[in-house]
Length: 88
Image (cartoon, rainbow, N blue to C red; front, side, top):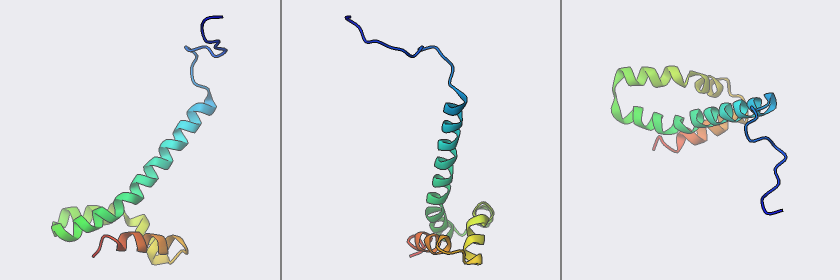
C-alpha cells in the first residue's frame, strides 16, 4: 500500500445536501456583508452629499432602517451601535 486509500469518487457530483449547504453559506455571507457595509456606506453618504447616492443607500438599507424604527430588540440596538461607530 504505497498510495492513499480513497473511498470517495473524485469525479462524483455534489449531493443535494452539499449544494444546499453551499447555498446557505453564500446566503449567510451575503447577509453579513450587507450588514457590515451599512456603517461605511452611511459614513460615506454623510461625507459625499450626493443626492442619487444618498437615495440609493436609503433604498438599499431600508430594511435595516425599519428594524431601527420598529425598535425590535436586540436587533435595533445592534444596528444603532454599529452604524453609530461610523457617524462620528
